Image 1: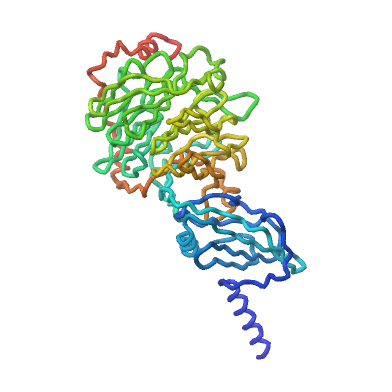
Image 2 (image 1 turned 45 degrees about the horizontal axis):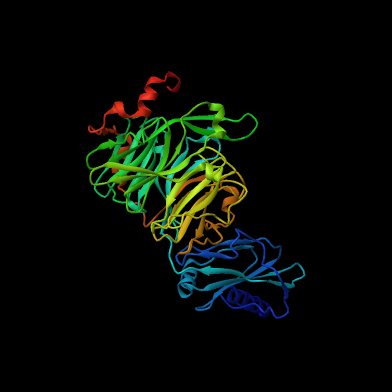
Length: 507
């Protein structure tokens, strides 16, 4: 009976310690460096509304003691025989709320096989004043090219670990879905493309869900690479003749355009319009709107010459004025020449405050998601100064998105293993200074070591996509509505279309 009582008291003591009371570490050996953890969260800046940063302690031990504390509020304390640190979501959000604009520290102590404690230098994390948009939308697609038929569009609540499907292609006979876009981070205005079976462009607004055939007699193809005007009424597309080939001596592929033009679709009139200055024998692609919706930025390369010259193709950064009230275009301006950088420019994305244009710089081409030279750069739209994102890696950094308050950036990177694309979050202050990025947190901190699927085209949105599932499926599986071509435009004036129609080698 006495022995049972001792065991009972010992169990209560351990439980008591595990629920928040400190272990006696007075005799611990102090290690003058931070512990090795995965993922790396040291010296980062985080939003005050982000999900818990669960992590795995890489230091060997038989017991682990963790204390997470800030200037204000009660510390989160954990004692466990496991190296995985699973933080209470309620305690975490309370701690962050109490330390907005301040620093929190994570203290890690590890007990070795001799039952001696080693206490490491605390990991330091800044809690920003500004929140990040609450959701991230992305496509999940397999890395291997032969397995692309299993994919889906998903949304993740960044304040928790909840992930929900928006649309998965098992509901549409395994076709290809890509290029989702939102109007000014607004989840109520969404679109994505369907290729092959049930092909078309699916558009969802607060009032309706419908599918379009955006190919007309006066355009060289259906719309791709979309950008939704902040007014929620206009969608810009590039229309491309895309080609792909694989390298014989490297496990990668190249995607390039034989031709491409720009068009703008008006939801209200169901009309596509363009201008002779952006439908030329030059290759215009990758459109993106200015925050006021009055300028369309895009990338432009010389006319296609030879497939063998793919690695000598460079895209300049351009813009053209646009009047949303009359659907008319104005003057074209050159913003940045590829020759000035001795490299190509792609994926231009402007911060909502209009201060910075974030773009991908690479050795050649525009489709840079396989190009290991692809890095992120900032262009100040006020001074014209170009600065490199200071946390580029030695592999691919590519697609990127801004938060609606311009303080956060999410970008695609293969930096973890060189193969799979993961979303990374980085704080950008009002002066354009970037802070060290961190990977999208997961409930299981070892998640990325076993989940071998790409996160493709991450898009920050201010809330959950709540489109009616039945209406969405009806649109996906239904016949597309045919868009009209702007009757004000003479198709014979579109240099790019005329040259394509007259050049048999491009068909």
